[in-house]
Image (cartoon, rainbow, N blue to C red):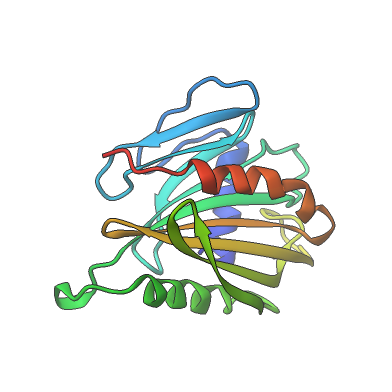
Length: 198
């Protein structure tokens, strides 16, 4: 969903608390905040961990909007975890309708271009009454996301894709291998609370 260069730029932006691209808003909650964006290209609301920051932008590879959520930078530049939502339009070239599977195929194809990326599983799932796909991958991330001489760090990713109206939403978690399990509940919360605004 986000290439290495994009991840470096995002880490720097999130670390500085900069919010770029498509606008959104946050609201108060005990452990989670609510992100909401009524822009027709995005059209979603979702809950994310309290204290995390977000940035919304357009993916240069796919042309689709992406909202990335991450904990505040600790100053070291070390990668730990990112969660994101990509919003894919199912209308392809010439106005032809794309299936949710076709959109998901494209997302997986992009992710497999990451260093040492490997598809671990792709299974059918559901989000409420909505059909979904659950994708698990292993890959490497830069250990220091915006510094030279960074090393590749073994990481795990999970992506849930599902269709709502004319959009396919892809919710993604990517974290260091040893910390991946810590964020499972937050990922599940994001998947379950994602709704269309309009």
